[in-house]
Image 1 (cartoon, rainbow, N blue to C red):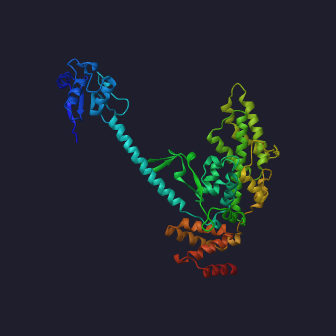
Image 2 (cartoon, rainbow, N blue to C red):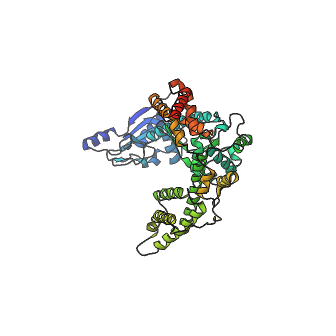
Image 3 (tube, helix red, strand yellow):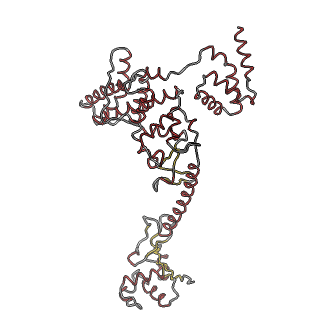
Length: 476
């Protein structure tokens, strides 16, 4: 193996420069060739006099063996040697800058604006190692996700409706491949990402890390960061029927009894429907709502939708945005100031409606404003559309509130249950279990009774104790 031969081609000059407190054209060279002629050639190419000028012209070094031109000569020198300019140092490692031809040399001390070759090589090596580590992590996570299944009969009512609507929106990709947020825009009039995240939080949709395009994921320490808009998802299969139409039929043919979840899902959807109309109106008048203003409007919509219909709130939006547009034309106002008044205008308008001073009208859906597949599902299953008032929706999804007698019957056992749960640190498990029984259609009282029975090993009240409590209350 050829060992490098180090030569300082201007050692006398280096001593002179050190005495003067500066460096000029001092070059370090390593020669890797065993050919003595190559050593002589490299020395002659980089040799300088005390004035910092090269002793010989490059043309005077030709011809050299079979080499006839300067380009071939400098290529040969780079192959058999490496050179560093001491006047140029790396801003990262303080090492000397590698040079390849005489034109790379600098006469004054300076820091490089970019990293040196060694630093760049090290950085590239680290990046390759990081990519390999990331790839291994993504492969493992994807393998775990692909091995996951789900009992579709246990999917909550609200998630089931979203899933059925999503199937209509992206058919056939839900059952056959992967998809991204942007593929699901037909799910709802706006904010479709919000509903996709509901399915992700329920572990019905999982990430397929390897299906995303390169650059979607990156390592930040031990954490994996990603661009949400580029992420890919897939449907977790049913544990018995897999990812199929038959599996979805479990959801299509079920009895939807969790009225509280369905009511809240309708409110989420109806807010998105109102918000889409608001966005379209703002575009028509060149308004741009700030994020906080959009949040305020969504809160206003949600409260109003407990009574009014989506189409009625469209009429309000049309009126207040038109008023804001008129305001923006005044000399003391502008588009930004006027758009900031929209939440306040909406709140005041609805206050007057509640007092009978304003009226809401049924407004037609704009042609460019689709209801989305979730809206179609609400119509197919419950005959609810944009003209259905919130009062009627709440009647359809009636939530039975336990009577005072029923609540009083289990006050002591329920207090005991939560006290034990807190003491044992299982409050979350107790609440999840309680919610599960209610989702199955049990009343609140029956659900509490079931939880008490399930956690009897913790020393909680038994069924007999509950009956005794009932008898005591009856005697009173």
